Image 1 (cartoon, rainbow, N blue to C red):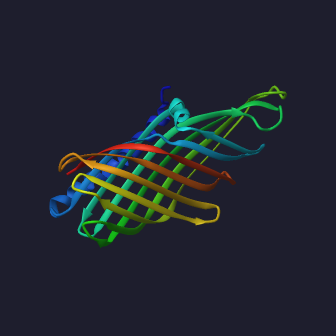
Image 2: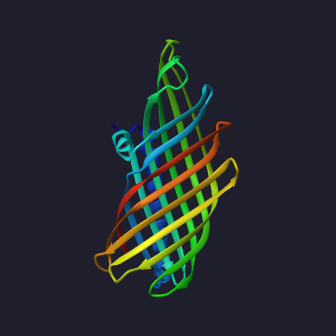
Image 3: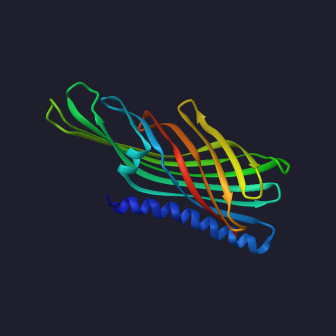
Length: 256
């Protein structure tokens, strides 16, 4: 399925943010050669759970990782980290657009409901390494997570014989707190776990958890696999909505 011009623009905007920060940190590197950097591109095979409040009631939708791949319209996922001494700066971005179809739950008025979800998130964290030994490193810090979400619902005609569609969207920023544990097994294998949570209140919350194992091929290149979950709860269009992405991922990393 091809992407529309607006979808391509959204992916380009996300990529531009990442590219601009890469250029900025590259300029800093020229003045501070003891900075180290790593960039990661990854594929996240995430299942999708959504709870959308419509004028007709709550519409819940759930898709497995395989279903998501079948209905994926576009995706861009990348991460970047800069480190100097005990301090680390982490940037993570995800763009995803997909759709889910299910039987409409509102009696026989409609036959099917299609939920189109477009989600863009960029998280920036500042982490401080407060414990470091050859066997374990512990980081903790804080940052911001920016969301831009659009959710559209289309109801196919049932007994009413009239289709109905609506669309809602919003952009917002949440503060987050984060902690990360890194355990090197040897020079090649390393395990990492990260958790963060934040928001501004009971109707605006977000959390993320991931665990991964990385293999370092040489000083530059690495590969990783793991599992990641991300959740957001936010009032969009005056109605509470919730999105959860969960599933395995694979990644390729480069140090420079």
